[in-house]
Length: 222
Ligand code: DC
Image 1: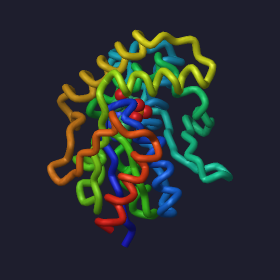
Image 2: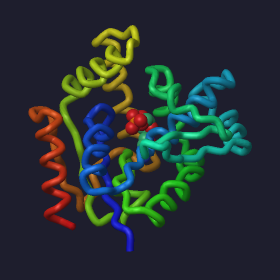
Image 3: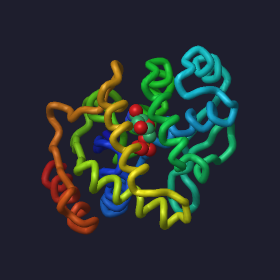
């Protein structure tokens, strides 16, 4: 029987960085489900479809294929119609597109089996917004990782600057607050801690302390 660890939480809480390191330590596969919503957002963006144009997006997903795979370094890549689009899904525009398309119930349904199948065949640490509540309600361990909006915006800002992107902190903070609102107020699978999750606030923890905290929670419960 495979073990699943669900990590949910708002944008910029450090889920992906922390989960990736914890997965390495435990020899689990790390699955970043946000990349799937981002790939669908990217597809709409490239086709010139508005992020809130629900009929056009529903039409679009009839003909697209989204897949997750792993490269030689065991890093996740996301394929859109067979093309590796991993490098194109992290811009602020695509973040907002991903948040908007993720509010469409049919988009969520479209991605559900793909996510569940990953957990059927592997020991996974899966991160997202609804992993503990909807995708893997029977996950052995559920963690809700959070931090204040200002701390999360600063982390995201540093990350984007390091990638050479031209952004300013206030815009990043505005995006974080808007996405928090969208993600937690949508009707389907809104962002919220599962009843049986452990809530971890990383506002005052650095990366090393956050990873140590998560690994200790995981080992304790496994
Ligand atoms: O984790 P991320 O920032 O890459 O996610 C991008 C968007 O996708 C986010 O705004 C909300 C959505 N998302 C979701 O609704 N459910 C998930 N399991 C993962 C992401």
